[in-house]
Image 1 (cartoon, rainbow over the protein chains, first blue to last red):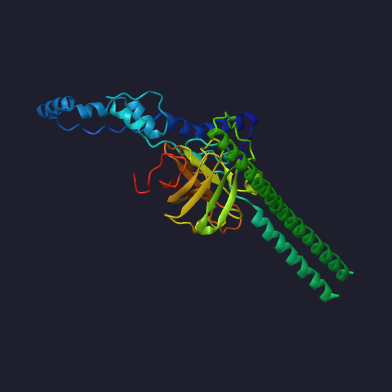
Image 2 (image 1 turned 180 degrees about the vertical axis):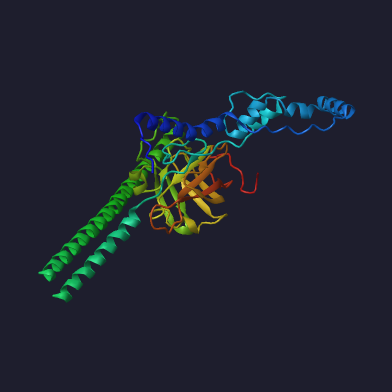
Length: 151
Length: 217
């Protein structure tokens, strides 16, 4: 059997080719994507479209509800609006008439009266302390009796 | 050897539990005693203040000018609260801090005094002065007495809300709001609040406070 000598040069070349073969598909996949043809648009009836557009423009309600779409989208996304609602702007009006935020900071206590304040903190741990104290005494007594029996 | 160690552990555990239990019980009893003492002091102060008010009223009738009442200090008695149905007769103390509520029902600073226009808020602990507040129903009567006025109220609202839910609102008309923790029988820190609203009963206020009868809207 004939032996082929392996040189450093051939080994380095083989490694470079192997690395290129491994990495090339990844690089190529990032560069080429499948082409998807857009669906064909249906034939537009120009007469009907014109009538619909004219009707939409004449419809003040529809027109007003489409004003300031950014504010509407922000409100839907929960972003607080900064603009003041105007009388004619129904989209902004819907933002302004939203239910007022009644969330209260956790752990807040009421010490003085204010409109919308939570009730004063009347929770007390004293009954729980009393029960825990009595329970500790009883358990301690049981332990002493157990010790006396063992003795 | 092992039995000796178990014996020591038992003695140590029993002693620890005894000390812990005794400490807790003494602490709670001390708090209750201090509260009772402060309630007695507040009742004496209230009686003195009522006597002074009667003197001032007599002077007013004689057209002698009297000094006006300044800001109410925290811990001072401000009113007397009576609820016949649950046999409650307590002196209301200014403030809703731990010390005030330990001594008696507390009047929320900034809220109206009972009988004045606005919302008068009185709170108390469920294990102390308002321990039977859950027995009150719509239509029950409450009597209040302050240095300025005295009269009766009828309960027109009863609701249970979360402890972080807004519960107190301004009112143009005289309104009395009683609050305590809910459930009344609960082990630990009660999560909810019982809110009772009362409106003044027309004809029971001798000082001519503008009131509406309960049926009016």
